[in-house]
Length: 396
Ligand code: PMP
Ligand code: GLU
Image 1 (cartoon, helix red, strand yellow):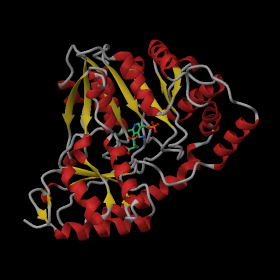
Image 2 (cartoon, rainbow, N blue to C red; image 1 turned 120 degrees about the vertical axis):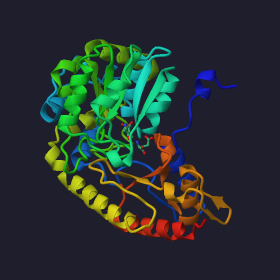
Image 3 (cartoon, protein in one colour; image 1 turned 180 degrees about the horizontal axis):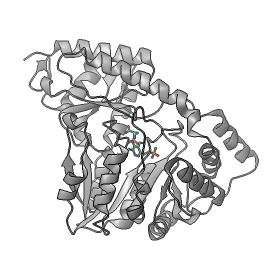
Image 4 (cartoon, rainbow, N blue to C red; image 1 turned 45 degrees about the horizontal axis):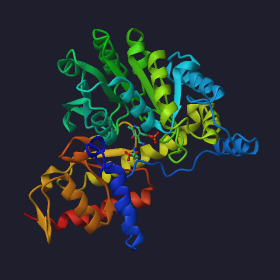
């Protein structure tokens, strides 16, 4: 019998959908997968060359638990250069992906019953990690009309003596929303009144921002020690499989994460660490082509989706997702399919349109679905055409 602790944990909805579409593909079905948040680009050559060099130079040993010093120094430089935040290398802990970084911080900070504020729609794993830590999720909902954002005042209304942590993500997965400098400064000012409340700033999509510029909340001086800046290389450098994420945080939080990691994973791969050191030295301007391509895909998918009656979209300013409202299809039917919620619609689209997307309920918003546009324009066009045809089959 599995432990009670594990019974509380749900399977990751994003990875589950990716698995389902892989299974259908293996059966010969031509599935277009717009479910997983994974860039379709290759890792830049400079980074691959650094990894090959590391293999040749026998970087094959255990590294220090938080990562090689030269890697942490390169992260310190990057955080100063791009985010204007000062950390010492000892305040940096690298892990096996930002996902592990988030888990480390939550395990380090949350006591049973502590309240943790989540801004919905939120990334699937946040809720599960909080539950795993016996935290009490306090969910504040936003909606498409507000561009899926929540302002400082609404966050403050939910802060109590028990609020230990807030999970903040800009650009946001799944909504693609990017908070402006002003909005973030207001949240920072507000938080300075609550020194026992911490904030995880998950900046994994930092390099995929279109018209609104990314701003790190760790820049707000008054709350610097309350902020845990989390980032990684999966999205910005197309390195999902390499597995490296990192935190910059107050020394005691970094020490706590080290302690956990020292018992659980030791450190991430030594070869990956050397590759990421090279990635950190890449100037963000070198990533402009990728950003430009994502922006064009975003414009395309908005244009195509807006032609489908019943789908409502906003204009995501970053990441590579569109989170659209599909609630007008609730109550409709086709063959054995009855659409009562976003999950029903995701199964219908997978089986009838052969397009994999993720149901909004996994992100805390039942009225929406998340479509990842991290794939080429031909596939995006074909996928939306198929979605439209399938939706046309639904009737009352
Ligand atoms: N945060 C968000 C918002 C994400 O979408 C993801 C998806 N990968 C992660 C963290 C985890 O990234 P990593 O691959 O570095 O574990
Ligand atoms: N973060 C990506 C997503 O939301 C990858 C899958 C995952 O890590 O859960 O699709």
